[in-house]
Image 1 (spheres, helix red, strand yellow):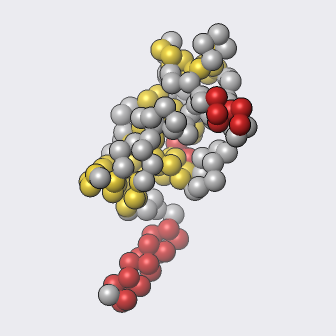
Image 2 (image 1 turned 30 degrees about the vertical axis):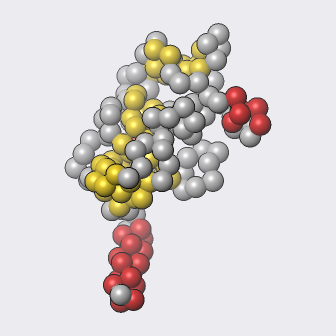
Length: 152
């Protein structure tokens, strides 16, 4: 058992050293379904895909899993009157007052048409830490596409 654990640790370290996305992710956050995810290297970063956001701004952990809702050519803008963003004119879930007022998480209040290499990612829950709080992300910040293989 110790040898197997050491082997898995060394394999994960070598994988990380090579700059590849981690082959598996344990997701405990309910912002996307909880469970075990595997990296799918051939899957495109497209709307509906679950992706790893690497080094999310203003977030203490090194990665998050989010659902891609916007891609190149989409419009993503802050709507001051609504107090939330619009994606192609459609209102998105708003930032949480608790996060903004108590935790002082900044809200991105720009407006842009996403470049071909940019995405907007949201979680499935109202308290998700996602593009409510930071600008569209270049694909270089996307660590890969993941698929749920074991839910709990």
